[in-house]
Amino acid sequence: MNASVSKEPLDARDRPARLTVGVVGAGRVGPALAASLQLAGHRPVAVSGVSDASRRRAAALLPDVPLVEPAEVLARAELVLLTVPDDVLPTLVEGLVETGAVRPGQLLVHTSGRYGAKVLDPALRAGALPLALHPAMTFTGTAVDVQRLAGCSFGVTAPEGLRLAAEALVIEMGGEPEWIAEEARPLYHAALALGANHLVTLVAQSMELLSKAGVTAPDRMLGPLLGAALDNALRSGDAALTGPVARGDAGTVAAHIGELRTHAPQAVAGYVAMARATADRALAHGLLKAELAEDLLVVLADQERRPGGAGPGEPR
Image (cartoon, rainbow, N blue to C red; front, side):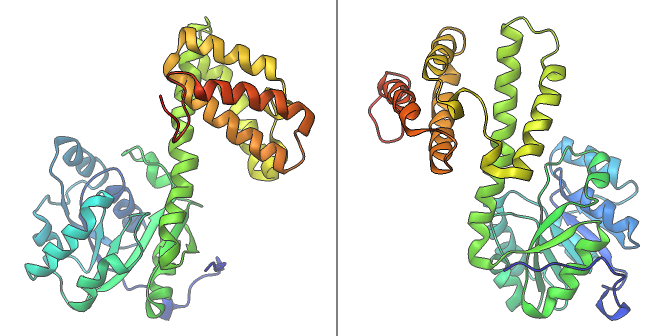
């Protein structure tokens, strides 16, 4: 379920009142969102964090906001951001409810991509108002994150009666609300992880290989290339596919794999898997001719059968 949201000024009735804000889990996300809400006029009043790094982040982005226990955060705040790892969230919510920390009428917002609003059902039964607001952005844990929220899409899931409040909060943080159905949250999150998380791995591997090839500034070499590739992909989708796999250059692909086996054997499996996925998409969209694909697929299948290069479900 998607909805386009106008950037027209919100009616006063649709704006959340100026709220006291608390953060449970001072990782990279929570302090940045609280700092952004502060710019919109809300007032951070409490934050919890366990590690030294989380405490430093809180001090940098939310100076003078006291560090307290999670239950105390909920006692002080009208809007609480639960910014903890996905696997921790259900237990945290249940624990806060069982200890009586959740108050009726309190806005409880989690930022997990995996979960929708139902993970907050225990808090809903306690009278809280549940929102799932997931910023589709990677965070550094520094002040630059607050600036990057401008124009950032948020995956939003909330009860029908809280849609206006959810939209308002996202817009106040400079973001764009994108409505995600409860049952679609896992797929939505998998899509983002496939693109963003794996991109970092691919870029890091590419920089390592360029360094081994003698390139002194791999980041400078890759920047324009990857920027253009990303722009083309976002504009044109599969039509932007290029390179030896999309052209069906089986000999070149075989040479690449041979070099990787010699210099970076840990990269072979990823290269072969992505080459296979690229070939499949290029074939499906008519970019790779069937007669050229045959030799290419033979090369990839041979590599998948070799020790250390087996595909899913095949013996290693």
